[in-house]
Image 1: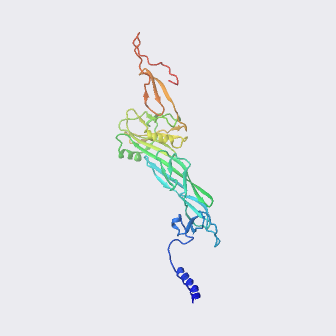
Image 2: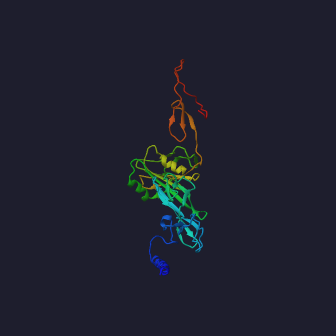
Image 3: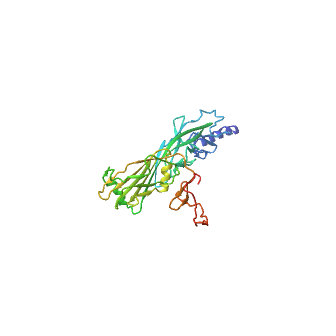
Length: 348
């Protein structure tokens, strides 16, 4: 009798466990972390497997009961390319996802991917989530890189992200109706009625840190409207202005810096279109080409101010004139206070 008990009881226990639905993940189920697997299992290469002593992700020591699970064969980024537009300094985002392909042909999100950018000029990417955020200040293209652990090494993939800047500025008194006129007026080419840009000169080359240009033209009457456009690959600045007797526009500094630092070496095109009040026609301006050098100009400019009768200094990247030389006491003979010479060396 005791011998029969020893045979029957284990058999009954086996039947009870065979019919038990204990929940949890089944070995071989897909996973991204160990927490998604059942007790005693590990997430290895995206699959739940039985954890053995000393076992790490990617290792399967002691597996003799069957063939090994699928391994990671390749990785790619989705999307493979993205184009974002920053309007008036906005900071658009794009999330990149690392997708792995297993040896059995299945796919899934990568575990523990690491993201980076080849250049931080146009924005930054979160190293863990893959979210790219444009800085809204510089346009251009960057390469997104991801590395994924696989087996005993890593796999990697790349994608591209491009940011285009669009900035619209309005001068004093410009209304929505004024802006709309530029889209409905009849465009014409007439050199005798065009704005006639005189500064900057066509073909000019400027350092990246030069102070914003004071765009100047020669034709304007009361009631005229103007559209100044500066564009290059990756950035466009548009300004709408009313008639100004001085016929000029000092470019907004933030807009100027964006143009100068986006796509270094790429030429920019400047146009001034005149919406003539008398005819209602849009007289297109002649384009002017500008190039920004890939280097900055550091230093100070000294010059002789004829009106003030003294040497004046302007530091790079600013428009502030500094009368740095103090006034000497009056001369005993004639009472003059000479503060400089009419010739200036390059060091002041």
